[in-house]
Image 1: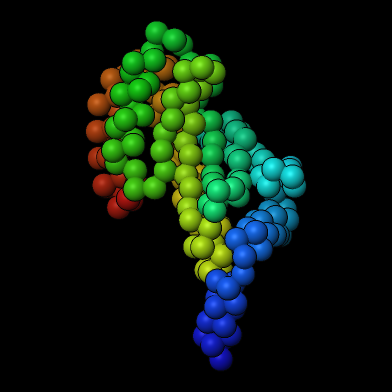
Image 2: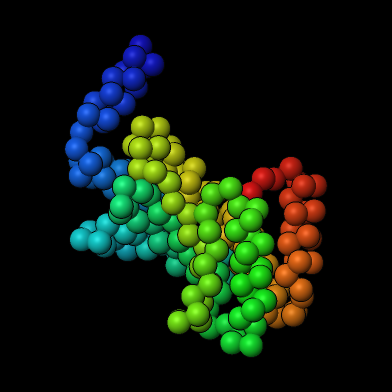
Length: 179
């Protein structure tokens, strides 16, 4: 009976206008944050939520969850105010990540000197599948921590981007993780 109910809900949601679909996903995103009792801020007009999660031990960062352009977006800054002299290496490391990530992109913003990890999913996926918003957030969070650690290693230890990526891939392979 639950399969039939879920099927009918999906059919109904597919028949809704784009605006109504966004509204449903937006309500589910807010409900998830509320139910989990996370510390967060809601920006109704812009349809985004700002939440602080740990990105490394004893360091929190603002994670942003947004709905626009028919997609569910997750983004977080993984490096702020980077040294300008490392710009080339930052681009190289970002390119390495972008080559191995299945979902998401690492962006180096040279105008404002920061690096962010941005992941987006077609709105239909969280609209049709219960729990997909949470899954997307968990995956974004997990990868953001690895990306943050890699960029910290580049800036603090001055390690070469190729070595950072090789170590990360080796570590993920031994842990059975996929990007």
